[in-house]
Length: 192
Image 1 (cartoon, rainbow, N blue to C red):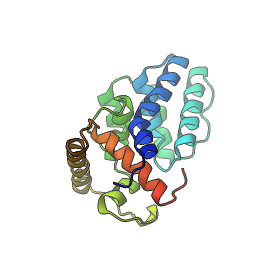
Image 2: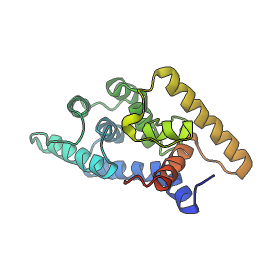
Image 3: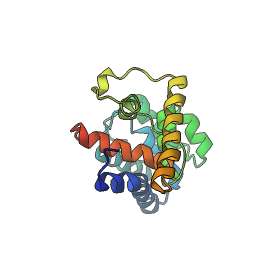
Image 4: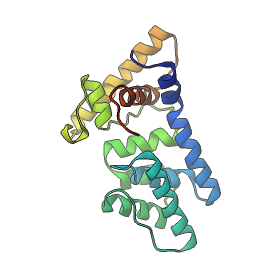
């Protein structure tokens, strides 16, 4: 309800824009789109979006040219996942998801790969705060169990149904998550 028209527009196309960026890298490096999205998703935890894309391209370029992998701004275990996706030349969504593990990272992968046209919900700390209707720093967000992740995802899916009925729209649940994420960050002054 707090979304401005700009928030709605940005959120509606967020996954579409991410998909286009990954498609561009896929074309540039002659690599399957799912592999590129897998690398981006693997490097996403605790990484700002712009840096995430830079890190992903640097890793993809290093792999394509046979260079040493660069330093990245996420956890070593996530870099290792990205390397596995690249080095094993994995092009299967199911196999990439098995490497990614983790509900949030898998949902992020599927959201980008499907151009936001899915009912997977990327439940990060911001999505958790939106769901519970309050703002806290991300350090204060508890670990999200599988049961809680499902409850939050179900709430976002139900919100999409309700919003679409009220507003006569056709947003996917992933788009609703992105619209609320953009709005939440603006309302609470969260730096991109």
